[in-house]
Length: 109
Image (tube, rainbow, N blue to C red):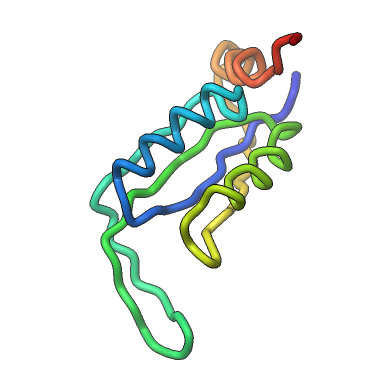
């Protein structure tokens, strides 16, 4: 069974998050993208403490699609230094993990 992972990123525009999520799913780069709106982020940026209201994206994908997802997302993300964290999935239901694998397998052209 292929390994699954969750990729985290945030955006400051909920509509843009929805558009990116649809594209990611359409290209089979992920099986599921969950959007958590009105996340409040606190962070250090260029020497000062900042805060922002953002939409968190939880992207469920297979390990072998992470590099392509990274390249695509960084090319389409509006932030200069976007969050891109990959969290390994250590376990889960076999049916759900198989669904992630099936949903992220590229279709023949």
